[in-house]
Picture 1 (cartoon, rainbow, N blue to C red):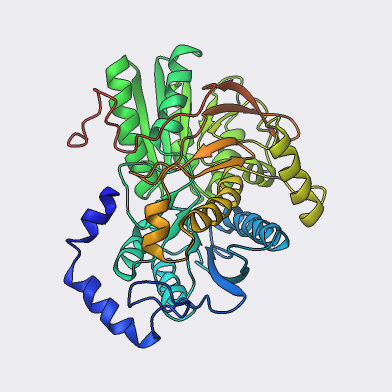
Picture 2 (picture 1 turned 90 degrees about the vertical axis):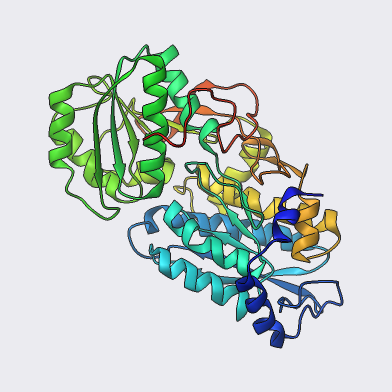
Length: 415
């Protein structure tokens, strides 16, 4: 039995209350065995799926393209016969870059629109806000973005990287290949950057790397000048950037204005991908990133993905890691449903372990215990045309370890 199922058996009274309250939806109209709370209707020739992305606000620079890649995947799946013979009907909602809006829209998608699953979210704050909604209403969220780890949820599938697939490989690369001795931490002021930097600081202490500064700004804040002054003063070997969304524009503009560049003060970023790089009006040549996918990945699956995306959205359109992870998530959901032979949430979750997909990033496989996927770590370097090329690879997929059980230096009780 999947260990999440045993956890569900001890669910809260709230979950039971919500389930009873929703029974007026009439249960599943497909004739399948399902929780009484489900109002998903698969009796016809279509199934509703919810796309929940920030189409406005600070995160729209990143999330709009994720919505586009999900839409492309849905069109491809529909052209190939759909899921269990049913065409995908998209219900799109705007999270508006606000965690509370994400929670409200997730509830609407599940209770009013009766979607079979939801795909989206970006910031960890948005995911944390949505998490109790999916748990209490027993629905499924596919979350497509790298995050800080330290989480596993029965009702969430994480198709972006967890810490041991992105943050730690980046640190290993900086220590082993770049021989760094000092590091400066710059991040947005919310869950992901603060937790990621807690992990980075413990790693640094283990390996004798000095953390010379740590600065945060609100997610939509452009006042990075003072923080950049501190980078100039401390002269770190590298800046580890966990800034998200369009705040990166202000940060890197201030960086350039102070005379900093990849040549004298390199940055490694874990939230700047191809679409963000293209939107930042400064020279990023030589700056580094850590992801699991780049548009420049050389594989038949990626060539097909990139060509299809450009054909649909224009020759100048670029693909990125979160877009690819979102695209992959819809295909993984299709495979899970067809493996379960049902859209029923419990059956899909029970069938999830071992599900694979030949994704643009390479073969990915779902871990049935923690609902993450095995992913290959890639360190990239921004080129003059703002595309990113791989300069280091883990060589093979890294199994997800969201709670960092394999790292003796990690202590969640320490700052």
